[in-house]
Image: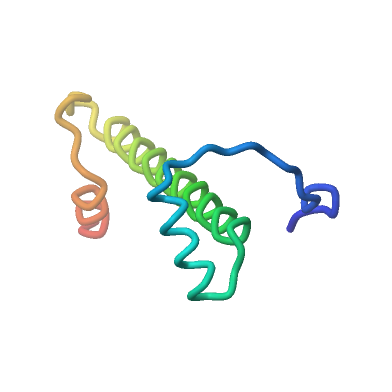
Length: 92
């Protein structure tokens, strides 16, 4: 949850290609929103997607490292994928 001070709006300058503004304006009419709402939602979706990607990349790296630690003979450049590791761990 965000604090009230974090929810306070701040004006920023933004330059976008005209074709993108036209597409945004189409959405504003179609969904009765304003540009700010659409751009805010797009930025939030992008940030959340990047956070999820970082989480899963870090998780995958941690699993590979765990696999390396549990199998001392395995070299780092020949590590398994996350799915292969999960399947192998499920077999134990």
